[in-house]
View 1 (cartoon, rainbow, N blue to C red):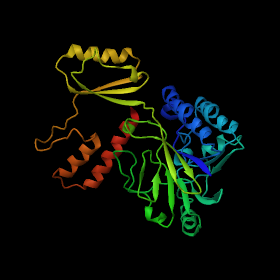
View 2 (view 1 turned 30 degrees about the vertical axis):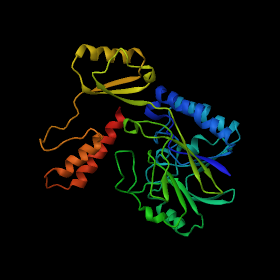
View 3 (view 1 turned 135 degrees about the vertical axis):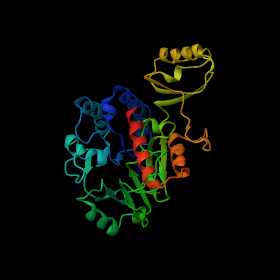
View 4 (view 1 turned 180 degrees about the vertical axis):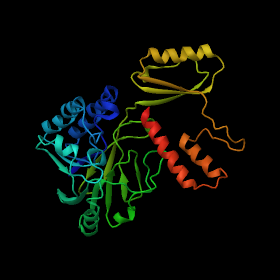
Length: 346
């Protein structure tokens, strides 16, 4: 039997932004639902963080999620197994109050898992592991140790995996807890990564600047063969444009309509031509436009920032090479947290 696995959909993201919801919907209309029909999928597993805000729900966002996602899944007679993620849970120390359980009770095709549960899908036993917190950690770890399930699916925070392209998680549970399983699929981190056993599947679409050029989508999983297939989302929202005295007259802007664009200036010898380049982008209907003109690190003449490096890599390498007596791991962690927050503000 083939099932679809999706995670970290974050309905209501970016303060219920219409721009983001329109972008999300294009993925669902053009990729997700057509693939379910084509592959005759009748079960969807959601690995957590269905909704974005753990403190409340915008009524418009809830209406959007029901009309465009959950109503359609019900109409297609698709069973949904939905694991509670940290964004779904109101409290940080318990999963007892969570958005998916409270908001989706009307759907008889949706089963919510706020506690670790062994489930049999077709002939495969799977251990569903929702967000692990202070209240459920002991029982969850006991079940992980004694379960006879071959596969785990959850919303896990494990160290050593990529949170995004720039950041590797340096805290959380040790992945060796899951060494005895054949496969572990998890949500929580939005970029895809794996160690051969544990697979972070990544979320379906770009949401922040640190997602740019990072492959997104969902997966089809065969419960008989344990094979998974990635279904990639071809649609992007964030674009970097590198300006090097680029000819505005021949530059094709059609791709950038309703997109979030950042112009990174590498060479600008004529200000008026650059302004015409920017005006052309505005006239094509970009949703947001930012210009970055000076991003080199100048503090040390001996330090060279390479063009192939991203911002966080440059900062981390600069810290490692700096002659300071402070704990560099603490500084790196602070820089990562600040950088992550900055990316989520734009």
